[in-house]
Image (cartoon, rainbow, N blue to C red; front, side, top):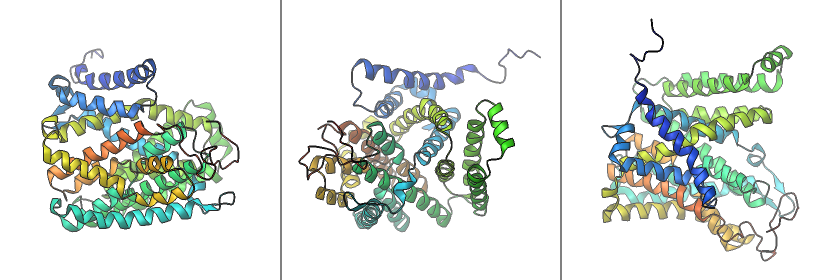
Length: 423
């Protein structure tokens, strides 16, 4: 047997991987050379995906019959799972607890919970505006409520951290809301999938396996750090990383079998791993694998999917443009309760915060699977959601006054640690 032959596998099938990795590697270099670091790489990655979908030659390497080929589709699913896992891993549990900040007399947890409740009510009422676009009225209203109120924490939290705002009051508020909104939307989608019966062969009792595994992982890693296990992990390079990735994929598969969204297992796995307090080295390795390899490819594939659901010739049609614009504005306006932050912050900060928490995408893509919308509306919702992930990050902190106190007339940031931050 000749092990160097490729009779059962054609290496040309790897062209999509080569293209995805090349794009992921080149984009940061181009942004650096052009000194356009204010543009998040994910924005260019999504736009590159749109370009790939618009060119017949490149599109044929990824797409067949308006669907992604098995290999790109697999990378898309794994990338989404790892992105949601990293989002759970970025969870700051302190902002999910009642935490009165005596300096400013603000209870962040209570404030963001109130915001989320109001946004949910507004989203529910606003959903009826699009009644004529729903093929299944009850499910459609529920889905739109979830989509409008959701926030893509996987984008928001890393951007807040990259801007060194995680220790500021406004950073804590954004992260707290984004984490709660994303968790609620994922759980709500999973419950709705079970109620609607998306999969005829769903096995909800498999969720018990997910819960048991997560509990075991939490207690074992946090309270039962056995010496023999430590010796094994110390003696094997990347042992913890390998085990974590295996656990992540296993939970995604179990969730899929149970009939709920696999992103639920991915997000919960990240939260449990984070709560078990892993070492900084382990977290860094996981983030390197995720953000350095799978997440960039995922965003490019998101752009390709958007290009498939709304080709340019359909995009420029007036009725589609108006629908996309209406949905985009709606996704921003339902977050109007954040205007209350004008009590403490300047208007520029409040406006940018509103744009920031309006970011959503994964929920919109997932909602399409329910078949509760007309085809044109579903496609427009995905494009509008993509715009919320592209435009707000570009506009973020364009005034360079983000987070400045209204009380101090923009002289200093309100910091939780009482340390002044230079402009």
